[in-house]
Length: 129
Image (cartoon, rainbow, N blue to C red):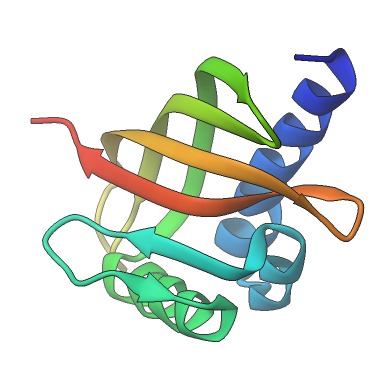
């Protein structure tokens, strides 16, 4: 895998934290997820398409009082026209009037290039115990 693909992936992962979690900018999903993306959240049905994914994350961030999501690539493998990423993330959650707490998750993302950007096409994650 090339350094430019790795850099593009890192930029997209950072955008998820800096725009979506930190600023609530749900419009950033156009640069994060492919048009026909799917997410497979833990304990919930699959969600398909950017509009539905945008609604899912908006609801999740509000309900969990999520403040940040720091993603770290553990391994990334080029597979045909896709990249398979295994990673870990630390979510920071802080309900009003309470101390911040963190939650650790592991994830797998299948990346595809769309409109000149590397984006998440399939996204699945699970919390660590």
